[in-house]
Image (cartoon, rainbow over all chains, first blue to last red; front, side, top):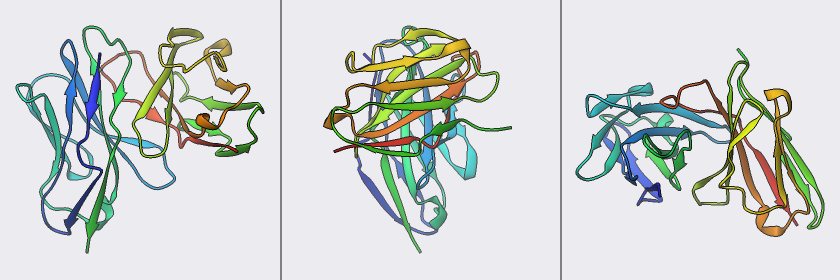
Length: 115
Length: 114
C-alpha cells in the first residue's frame, strides 16, 4: 500500500535562511512524487514533481526537491526563505506500477517564516 | 480558463441531515477526484472518476456517501445521513488524461456536522 509521512507538523525558519520540509514515502513500485502548497482559504497548488530522470527537480517560487531512492525520501528545499512562503505544504505519491491515478497525500507540514 | 470550482464553500448541518457537495472540474479534464481532510490529518482519497465512470472508489468510507458524475462533467458528493465524523474539508480535483500529471484542486467545501 502507498503511504506518505511528513514527520514535522511545523517548521520554523527565519527569512533569508534555507528551509527544508521533510517527506518519506512507501510504494510497492516506482513512485511519482509531488509537492503541493496550500495558502489560507485556498485549494492546493502544485509546486513540483518527480517523474523520472534527474533526482533534483525544480519548481515554482524557487522551490526544489531531491528524490532519494535509497532513503525513500523527497524533501522540499529552498535556499532562501521568504515570509510569503509561510503556508501548509503537502507531499504526495503515486505508484507508477499499481496505483493508477490514485495520489496519496501526507498530513501536511506548516511552514512559518519569521521576518 | 476557469479553475476547479466547488459549492458550497461551507455547510453546517445537523447530524442525520443530508448534504450535497458539487464540483465543476476544469473543462476538458476527464479525471475527477474527491478527497477529504479531517482537521490536522492527511488528505484522504475518496474516489476517482474517469469521465462518468467510477475508476476507483476504494476510499469511500461507507454507503452513506454517494458520488455521481452525470455526463462526465460536474460531480456531486452526497452524504446521507450525515454523522459527526463526516466533518472536514472535502476537496475536489481534476486532471487531464495522463497519470504523470499534477492535480488541479478546488478551494474545498468545509462540512460541519453538529
